[in-house]
Length: 65
Image 1: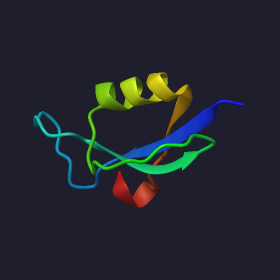
Image 2 (image 1 turned 180 degrees about the vertical axis):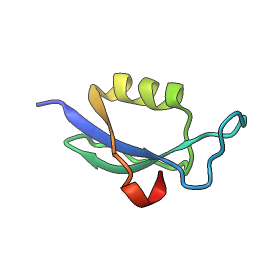
Image 3 (image 1 turned 45 degrees about the vertical axis):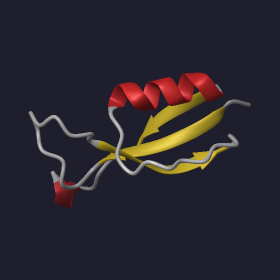
Image 4 (image 1 turned 135 degrees about the horizontal axis):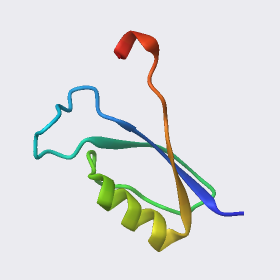
């Protein structure tokens, strides 16, 4: 079974800014240590591909939309 990396968009990330917008929330089935706090989508994809994991985006509640 492939591992899973759960991530979500940062709460204070703004559209059209050049800052990383995502945070890794949890990792399942993969031996992975994460040292960074904020990631770009391309960085998450590279990490997932390197460890053979699937990326899963967590949905935000109605209050944050």
